[in-house]
Length: 388
Image (spheres, rainbow, N blue to C red):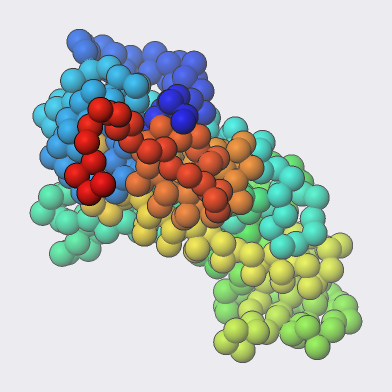
């Protein structure tokens, strides 16, 4: 019978603790901390994410019920609802943001060779944002409309994985296109975007950085066609043109030729117009790249359904940001474990099983074997069997 570490402790073993300590030191996370460390806080919040806890009281009750196992989980401080609430409110959320970015970097290296549906050697990113609704009464610092509050989660998703390569949490007032100002373009990489990111000044900056963009065009873009390429209409292609912009300001903001591709969406029959600065790739490949953008919509849906970022454990801005970044780090950590242990199960399946086996002493990879045998409880051999 396996008598090693708890499943939760095995998961924690995949965390780069030296990186976590550097993040804590960078923002003086242990200033005025006596017993409940930043790592204790992180583990408690990770436990809440993995086991779908609904409140701080819920976290406290569950962990105190397993008091004898907390040390083996890595938690050294006393778990208290008030202590955890205070830690979420006052400890700098950037500790967990930087740590999540470090985990993302590790995950990207592990998934660098994965296929995402398009045969392409370059890195492909999808860029989009989603709103996380809040109560205006409880979160007055995040007004969105008269009767509601919200924050916006801007995400650059690496389609090989898919792994969030860059995440930015902002108020609702930040326009999607402003996210381009925060990016450091990767030369040769593809950036797939919806029409909310049409800004020819910023797109030209991507072009000058040798990055490639594919963006859905707006209906009012003015242009002049230079020439057209032949297209295969059996694959839904309508036209493939090289154009120059003729708008009053657009022609100055983006003075070079662009690729304009019109394709019919096979799902709803609507025609989509795409703009790109890549003049060499086949038109069908560019259309396929844009279709892969929907992976980021699936990512947002998955995160909202399976991570605790809709019910928050604190009402301050720091507590909300802390919870979001820890949720992202848990998602990435599970993705790292999935790749390192060569698990074939989906992230959804892995999370569901981990949520029920956090306190078991079973090797994680055995949890996903079809004929896995769970360890039996050691019974006293002198105990009589009532039903013998």
